Image (tube, rainbow, N blue to C red; front, side, top):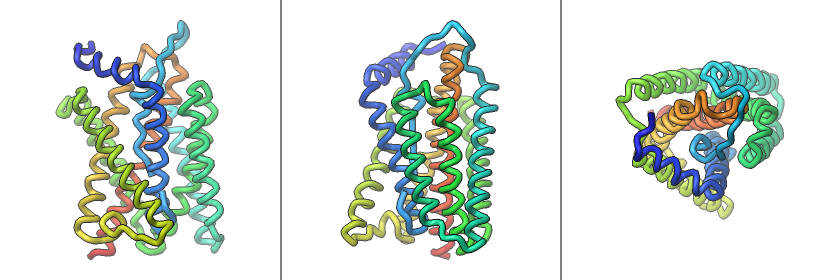
Amino acid sequence: MLDRRSFAAYLDLKQSNDLSRTLRFLLFLANLIISMSVFGLNTSNPAFSSYFWGGGSSRGKKMSLTGIFVKSMFCLGLVALTASYTWKMAYDGVDLKWWTSGSMLAAIAFSLLISFKNDWAPWLTPLYALAKGLFLGGISAYAHKRFPELPLQAVGMTILTFFVMLILFKTRVIKVTRQFRAIIITASATIFTVYIITWILSFFGIYVRFVWGTSWFAIAFNVIAAIVASLSLFLDFDYMERYIGRAPKSKEWVATWGLLITLIWLYVEILRLMKKLALRF
């Protein structure tokens, strides 16, 4: 059962659906900007799709935990498949510039479409996973060449963080309240703003070291971003808990898409942090 304050928070967010959809896509662009900036490209993303989706009712099958799990595993498999492909190409000496750029743009397009056309999620979410895998494979291979085993360690840390957050959520050590949502969304929007501003400044030859450098301040900023990314998982978990058995089964694909965005953002933040620490020490 939802307490009154939680239900009021949901209504507030639902009423601002149009603005929220715009923020959701802007946050997705932030994810890409972080990812590209990991090793000299420029892109990454927190997407709280869970709280910004429209409702919808159906007399047919409803969203289930098993359905979300199966679809998430399927899409993660697609990410791994295409990531391994670009990884292999990188070690075969292929120039991945156009592969990473093209897949990045494709991921943006697919996410934009899913944001405004949830009904297309069953077809677009797998395509998003394939495109994102190509991109992640490229930057991960580049990272591995400079810092052997770093991407594998980042993957391990991402998986560990996911299960720790899941345990904390299920045991209610951390509760998703209205204030918690507001803090995470505000923090994510702030991080997004900083990334966007520094990205724009880079076009004018201005390099913001406190974000992209290896100073202790830059590392602290990256730690905060990684923490916010990990806490964003609570918003995805909370959405699933609220709507399992209530939302139409097609929403499982939207839940999968939102979870993918959060996990990929977390992975990129961890990868960036580990890279900075490797350079520092």
